[in-house]
Image 1 (cartoon, rainbow, N blue to C red):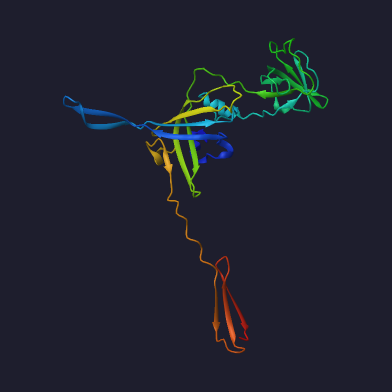
Image 2 (cartoon, one colour):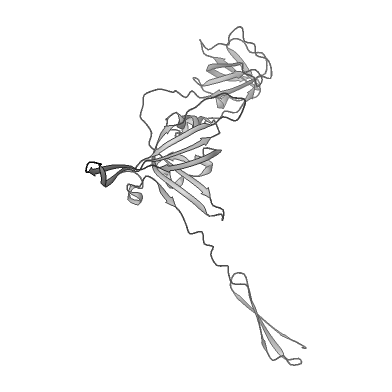
Length: 291
């Protein structure tokens, strides 16, 4: 899970998960500065100069948010939350106009990018939306000048249309500081949680087209130490990763409910049956026995 620095303790799968992730690894390769002496340069003292922490994983869901993170952008921004549902076109489009089945005007604004696709094949046109207006019960999309459908490309009724976001690679800009959380479950069900108060994405974006196996984004990031003024600096100070580990010992089971029989067990004598409810309260039942 990834998010802005201030969300470290609010990270949750519903809002911040990267989806299907496999082979998460956190490794430490400390670096040392050593002092040597003698002809053989024997090491007599060394000082740890770097923790050498790095994390890597395989991310299998090519969402806009994951692609933005992998490209070194701030994927925690809400700009990446788009409604990218796939719609159906009503009829063969004109050069710059497409009619969609149903009223989908709220999904589109001028300047949005969209795709047209022949079925589920690789014939795809990317265009920029000029307007989206009602056409009876349907939606008429007009494409901006310069983004018209090529004459040689033919689309038909039933082909697909949807909104896409441009993720610009290679641009100069501020590098976002993010936080991360990784959760693993041990064999006994105990959670093993690793918090990263501050990270920088170090590698990730990869686009490969293969028919032999599922592709993935080889994601990697470098944990960093917080500085005064960063969220949660008071809690974790210079720690670049925090292991939240427990003993894994199970709490003792609650004592079973019990019943106590008191009284003289003579013919027709009174007895007191005392029991314990699940909420811990007691109940007394008075009766007779013929034992």
